[in-house]
Image (cartoon, rainbow over the protein chains, first blue to last red):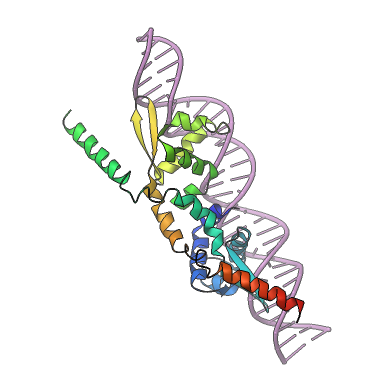
Length: 109
Length: 109
DNA sequence: CGCAGACATAACCGGCAGAATATTTATGCT
DNA sequence: AGCATAAATATTCTGCCGGTTATGTCTGCG
């Protein structure tokens, strides 16, 4: 599963958000989501691992997960192409004007 | 379907990439993907519409699709939190050094 | 050694996403 | 009006994803 698909799941995004602040053990992460069973979280973590978004290290019998934000680089690279598109008024403003024109045109044709 | 899920599909990303350059009719977009049937493309376009990533206008019997890049803003907002994490050497360089240290430590303990 | 804790994997299930075929709607053309 | 074209929707089928229960593996500890 690629980074795009990995991040398309809300739970996994929240996991990454937790890891952004600090490392956490699998147990801590699981505990943060009461709606998800232990194996469920384990599978989410596996997906995040295999798509390169987190790294693990063993610490006794715990697994400590940490963010590996470079994994998001491909995603960011793709989006960066579009960024600035909506920051310049080039399409949002244009769309707004189009809508106004169309609305006006429908009122008095 | 939210923007994250919409963009998690490779075909839909390619469609957006095509629309980045210019507007296209549904037919043009379909023709660009021989592996996808006409209704298939129509459904992809529907998803992109409903997640706010494209807008349509009717032009005769054609539907002209255009990028609505503001739809990507939530996605970009989420990622931007992580950007700079791998740009500052704060984790990639650190991880690299950690790895070197660990490797060295294992060679002569 | 043997037990308990932490986590991963296996097996299974329900639902939904994606693809194909068939049909419908709307528009242009003669 | 009648036909062809463009594109959307309906229907069906299949495969994968997320969740659960059950089980396995490894580690720390008495």
